[in-house]
Image (cartoon, rainbow, N blue to C red; front, side, top):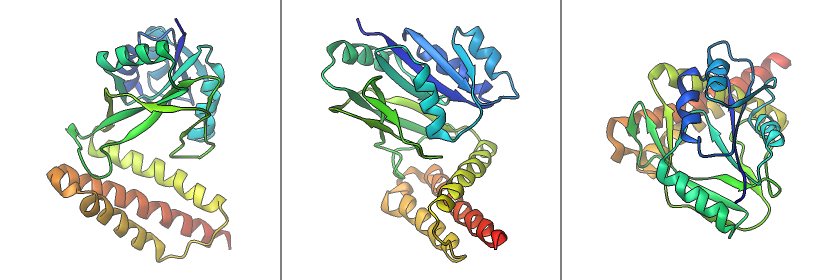
Length: 249
């Protein structure tokens, strides 16, 4: 049977890493690449039996490519610490890599916001390519919103990957700052000018897209919260890029 490696990157994920690693106990090896956690992430991961390595933060894409380089299995399952593999999905993964009818598989992701499952807002259906042959896949080098580039046939699995996207309002604020900072860096790296007006315009568009066009209104209060979260992240991304360009003049 083909060997399967699970790879996870972390930074201060003590509240998540234990359940995440438990959910992939069926894998032949579990690798955690930590970028300098100041909580108990590393201790918990080692206690759970994972191989833990340190690698200074280099952006999501580069960090995951480093983790991929440590894997030894024929197949790789890439997870974020806030994701969980259900027993049904684990069985489907094992069946898929045994059959080897494709080089990569997309998983349908089921996301929650402060404990509420989000069925719209562009969050569902949300297929993510996370399972692939090690010799056929790699991650894009994007600082944020990286994705797997797979050489060969890609199919889809049916069982959902559980994603605890946002646990609390504080978690939302933390992620807004982290993702907007990385997003601003990507905008600046492209070398294009970011005028001041883009921040409010893009923020408003992000809200309308999630809440109206992608039917977030049907998710009630949670849908409104998700739309605001996405709008705020987008606004701050452009605002930070504009400020950085102004300060560089």
